[in-house]
Length: 351
Ligand code: FES
Ligand SMILES: [Fe+2]
View 1 (cartoon, helix red, strand yellow):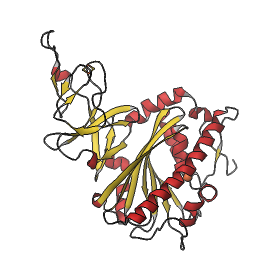
View 2 (tube, rainbow, N blue to C red):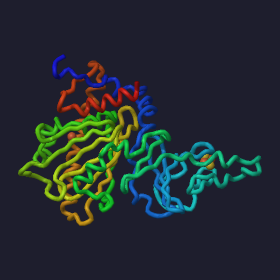
View 3 (tube, rainbow, N blue to C red):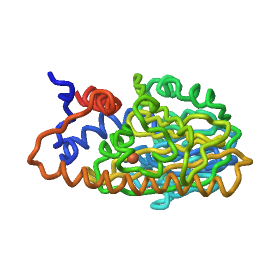
View 4 (tube, protein in one colour):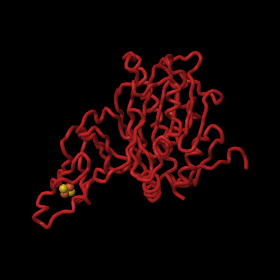
């Protein structure tokens, strides 16, 4: 076998809806996903509706100040119960007004008593696993999943070692995007910087993207890139500050966690399939309380530039693999080893 004979996944896996059905069932419904942060549910009675892949969920802070997550699906005829975020005394379904407590119990169902009674104790909102890393909230639809901190696989330690106290950061903003590609193409693009010198001139002027400096590390559920800034960075972003090196993690299947060199910062968000060739992403940005506004603007613009460049790359890949004439591609054994790891996790999950 020659060195570059590592095969990609079959390209049909990026266009075949049956593969996505299987991925939803075997990967996304069993995985931890970032859904938001404590600021989304600041006080008792706060709720925030969200999704884990295609599973509608709602995070609630109940009257006792306890955080809970539920499947956001009414036990009557299946309507979504909550939309958006806000504050409520109860969770009332907008369809026929079945009303649930903030602890998920079904409290009332109009006409239920007149029509023979409803077994309320059986028909509460379905609770889901909710666990936190500092202010960051993760939900998993699988009741038997491994604990979040096992799945995080050392990322909290790496972030802390970089000098970042997550609890001390402030939330800046959420940026959303939709991409015309399969979710795996977006993830795989994130997992290598082989394309950086060609496709991200601005990023590569600030960061040292040479293979000797830019280190790749895969463990069970985590794929990590360590990226130092150049000795003499030039360009649109100032990477000087307490955080010396960048960290770019993908937590399987699709939660991206970034730390840029510079002032303390974290950005995090999921890569979510919305269709076989449609991907939704959001990223929540957090920075040091005392970070200067000018630096914040610079760093958001820097990230947006990389994101815009990646969108073009990713959508071109989707257009190519969709052609269906070639069965598969090749991976470089070193520069693309995180993609190989990611693909092995996909294969293992679907087997
Ligand atoms: S579907 Fe929710 S009350 Fe009928
Ligand atoms: Fe990129």
